[in-house]
Image (cartoon, rainbow over all chains, first blue to last red; front, side, top):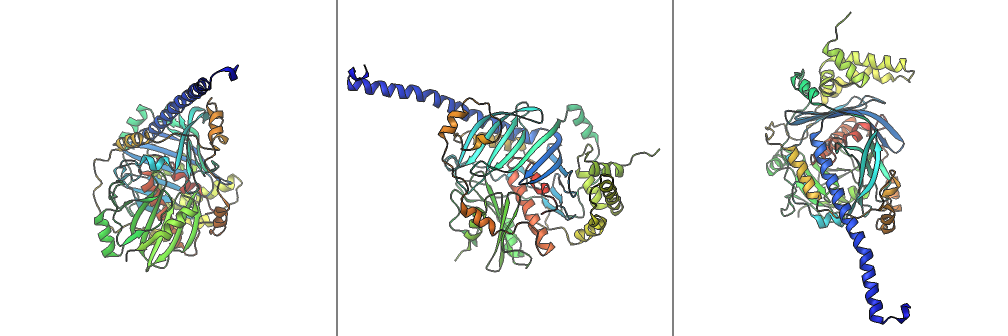
Amino acid sequence: MWRLLPRDTRLLIIVVGVCWLALPVGAVDSGQERSSLELLGRMAKALSEREYEGTLVYLNGHQLSTLRIAHRIDGGQTRESLLALSGPIRAVARGHQSVTCVLPDARAISVPRHPASAATLHSGALDIERLRSHYLIHLLGRSRIAGRDTRVVGIIPRDDLRYGYRFFVDEETGLPLKTDLMDSAAIPIEQVMFTEIEFLEEADKQALVSTPERTRPVAALSAQTATSTTPADPSKIVDAAPWHFTALPAGYRLVAADPPRAQAEAQVEGGRRWFMISDGLSTVSVYVEPDQEHGFTGYKRVGAVHAAGRLVDGHQVTVVGEAPLPTVQAIADALRTQP
Amino acid sequence: MTTATPDHWHLTALLDGEPGPGGFEVAISALEQDATLRARFERGLLIGQVLRGETSTPAARTISARVSAALATEPVPMRPARRQRVPASINRPAAALAIAASLVAVAVLVGPGLLSGPAMESPGMARNIAQQGTAEPAGSDDAQADAQVVERWTMEEPAGSTALDALLVDHRERASASGLTGFIPYAAVVGQSGLR
């Protein structure tokens, strides 16, 4: 019967059929796109606004740790703490002005806290086309974490030069109850999951506000306040002089640096320069400072973070980022002094 | 009967993992500032290890001295010591909204292999699997490069390790300022135990 139809009619039927099949697929994809992006937006909002306390497990390779986390908002500013419950005592306390870490061998480190206004990833207009060409984002269904229903959204890289994420977002609150850091084959490298979580009620907030702060954070350590960074404005060229980057990995570019005044001070006082390289999602920091002979050359790794070090014109260059080793290595190799 | 003092609360917070209203921050600060409290903390740590039948860590007895020594050489300044006022107009919700707004325009397709993780219930998953195949697994080059990597962060010079850890924390802080993953990436900072 098909053969009896005129050729044009057959062609028309095929075209209409293909369109009919394609339309629902497109509609579903569009809906999925909207849903996953809404979910990510809701997650980011919940991370900054929700107050909670809970127990986390952290898995990296065969290493498993249990952690206690508390996230509070005090006077409009967040205050967070994280304590390792297994193995040697390790802790992180993030106060209003600084982040303090107690590491496994009792070393303590304090760095200034950087304000949200200095956000380098999404503070400027996002280069959608650039991000689209390097990542895929999609809703992945539902799952259950810590006894709560979650929706799963994945951000997966299209190549081996960046890592991806899988977020299990609590349906009720929007908080990510499980976060997987994945390679391009979607194999988890690092996983952080709540096993128990409790959200702070309004009455508890009142009690917290009335609790006087007994001690100031880490007076013996550095409590420098943060300065804002040069934001990631795609239309603005970030001044890295006298340094510049050649042949960065595909999709990556210099997006931020310390503000010009801090740069000038660093130049005069022989201090540290900081640059951020990003593909719109993945970020790598580049630190350049005069060589003091306790830096390193070569490559190191802790968890999913890679670090590369090299000497360039009497300066120690250290590149640190949650990115695959070839990416971190290439960024380190790309730094040059301007001729 | 004794009345619990703030010091008791701090020790309980760290030894039992039960934070008070202010979280662990106050307890950690108190421990760093009070040598007596640190000594009590060490004893508590050791007693806990013995009671739980864990291998005790002889190095734990020297934590006080090591913390003192570390404090003598710390802090690791991240930039010249110049106090500046934090902008009063830090608006985290606005940052979160900016993230939401910017992500709205991101393309949506499904990635290969994503489905191998959680239990999925989405009806579109089978079709998505069929559409995948753009991403390639990590190749042998990566594995070869990994072989050249010094396995752990530990360095010959403690000052080098401390400086590198300070850079790691600083990077985390700068990268997490966007709010996309919040404080949770810090789990990786303390999630690594003594095998660093």
